[in-house]
Length: 66
Image (cartoon, rainbow, N blue to C red):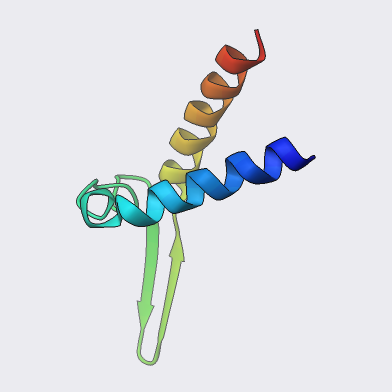
């Protein structure tokens, strides 16, 4: 458990340091991501982005598991 928490903390720190460059990646604005704009309300469903992130994380975990 300690190893997982340390790795998760390192990933968060690295993501925080790389945030200026990560913001330029078009994730969250892909075709298939739904946005509902109404007066006084904005609802966002990042369907395509979440599918891509899920596939990427699955591949990463399978590579490190072996």
